[in-house]
Image 1 (cartoon, one colour):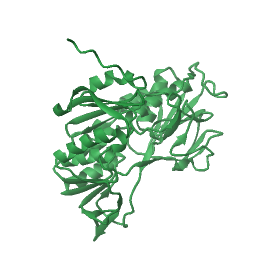
Image 2 (cartoon, rainbow, N blue to C red):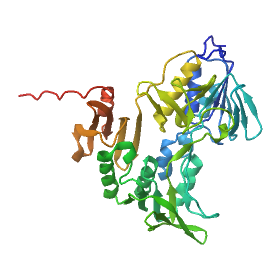
Image 3 (cartoon, one colour):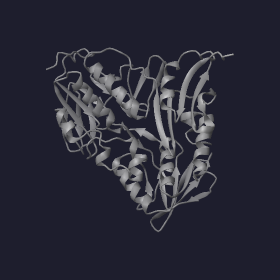
Image 4 (spheres, rainbow, N blue to C red):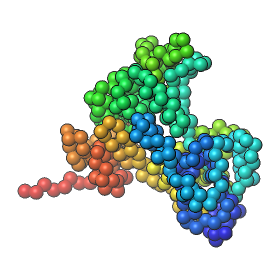
Amino acid sequence: MSPHNTADQGLRHPSHVLVVGAAAAGLTTAETLRRKGYEGRLTLLGGERHLPYDRPPLSKQVLDGTRTPDTSRLRAPEALAALDAEILLGDPATGLDPVTRTVRTASGRELRADAVVIATGVRPRTLPVPPGTEGVHVLRTLDDALALRAGLLASRRLVVAGEGVLGSEIAATARTMGLDVTLAGPQPAPMLAQFGPVIAARLAALHTGHGVRLRLGHAVTGLTAARGRVTGVRLDTDEVLPADLVVVAIGAEPATGWLAGSGLRVDNGLVCDSRCRAAEGIYAVGDVARWHHELLDASMRLENRTNATEQAMAVADTILGADRPYVPVPYFWTDQFDARIQAYGRFSPDAQVGVVDGDPASGRFVARCEQGGRVTGVIGWNMPRQARLRRPEIGGPVPAPAPVAP
């Protein structure tokens, strides 16, 4: 047994850590515990039947066929075996008693542990679909991606309902595959909520330049179908966008339904303190976790791969005795057509945006977002290194312009 203490009273030297969720956040929690010397019992419980795999490629390389399920795995089977963890797959959690820290599963298991880490992620929102209607997809899991790829290969005309990160990536991938693609959603530009109006307008130009039809600024209200097959997407104007394949990418909800009756606070995620702790011995990581960010003095929930791994490492440290708040600089990236866009910080619609490196005309630049005399975010467009170097500016005063040589 490792001689580490936990930060919770009554949870000294945990003999068993149970991680509920076997994607990036859950796996990273388990790996970090072992790397930091934890020698107790370790269980990884996953609702899917697949070994842990990477989600970001699902909307890109898995969808276009350049990666297979095997090459999307986060770790080889030998590496998972070396974790010395009990890995239980295809058995989703159905309930939790936080007092005894007992998790119930769909198969009837009851798993009791000294510490429980909840990493159940999110579930995609959907639109009402007539029973038996074919050609309507969501994208969250590997099985979803494989089913959608089969649909894309057999279709000609796609409508993506949802102009956020996932919808924009799917639209770009499908257009690259040769489909006629329309991107629909209530915001006036793709990823406006993530990037703000200046960068979102440039992303809109990128999509239209590659032939994606943008039908934005109007909410999607439903789908149309005939003879058991989807035929279109209806907007709030009553216009119908014709389609023989539809992807619904209108956001996701934290997968917390199984916590009903647990007494834990659920409000747009499992609510946690600044240590990502929901109750004594109960933690949350990744997309499902809503925690208090001490530096920003805000309640946050982030849906991205970077946060999933960074938060998992922080929680593993806390289980092993650390007592530090989790205070990341928010970060995510997206690949669309020939653009890799990396975003650090937060982006307000009324922030000032200025180019500080490169040139937008060349397709390579870094933009800095400023508000109230402080740097709030940095966005790199095909300039990953330069954007990363400006990350330390976030939260500080706007740097003075460099002097111009005579």
